[in-house]
Image 1 (cartoon, rainbow, N blue to C red):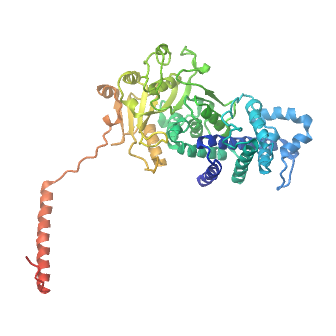
Image 2 (cartoon, helix red, strand yellow; image 1 turned 180 degrees about the horizontal axis):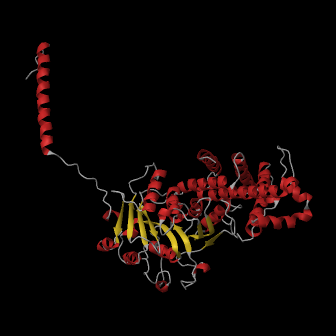
Image 3 (cartoon, rainbow, N blue to C red; image 1 turned 135 degrees about the vertical axis):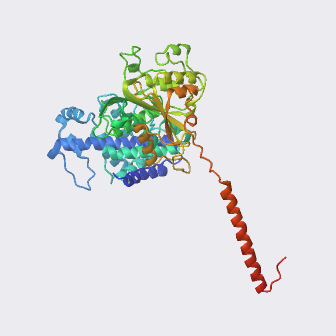
Length: 536
């Protein structure tokens, strides 16, 4: 799908959302819209696999027929259904009975079937509890089909849902149903809803350009990025994964020849957690290829990460994160002994930025790279944060500091930075990149264009130095600066004042005076010829 087609599909869906949500809050309507798009993908993917598996036995129907081929096969082969579904679980890892497929639901919506609402509710429950080998309990928990926001009475709600589903079905019927296409549309809608969510967008959305920078960085070889991308990442982790876009971007930028053993994500917001799980499946990631956990990273409530023995702990080859900026937290006294923080100290209550960083970094493999988005304050704030920053620097863990322009996020206008960390880095200096002046100004948000992204990644990869843009700084120099990582201390952005040659400027003034005298004389001669008495 071309960029133009992708944007057209996204715009069609966004227009449908705007037309149909009425007085409903955009965040609420987002969950309905994305869930229906998700159901459409699951159904189409499953039906395509069934068609391929059955071959010539797949029922043929007239082009304008409203009959559901899968339903016909089920009706004609009742004794074979159980065995067939077992086989399909091995093939595509899930099963959707014909009555719960998108085509079936869409046909009920088209005819405004009074049972559509009930069937949809049963279908969601089946997908959560029975479709997959893994449990996807609560996947649709944030979609309240009985909400009065859809209508005051059950018939009103049924009619509203029928209208939404019919509009989506008609709007996207001309587009391909594969994961790349619908995945792109899903991402487009997430971005559009984020744009309308203001500060709340930070809970689930990282702008694509920034996501690309992080993904490109962590997929490069950690020891020597100049050699290019890794061929495999065993485990990838985002401990504040939002809608999962960052994790999917890592998969995308690893390339077609690269492989990921398993994707891991953690998210504390239940709505966003469900978005992430849908997003993974919708992008063709099988249920056994990812694990998203609903929980709080700061309290470390995920059992697979609670091993205290460093030699037995889960380790990740690539870690990306965009945690909440300067999040207020309330660490208990015993937290100081937590294996993630014991060697560094606790981040202050006013800002958990370093708590998030240390949580992720604890699980970074020796051959891995971590890239995390943080507010600029982590580079220079004093107190507990200065102590943590100093220890990370002394141990040689901070590899690169990248300063980004302000107003790139929907959720905040403050400038942010990317910190790149490694356990076993090759260079004994820190690379500073000042990308804060390289962007396209927008009405609401500034943008990083592809050339801006490429410049940042290339500078990191080849550790290039460029006046006013990038510089490698020794740890001795950083120590002299009190372990302050403020980029302006190391890269001057001031423009040199133009040197003035006083003799040359004097000669220019002399020449100007001569010209003035010459033209005044000519002017006065014209006045005499015209016999105008205007001379003083």
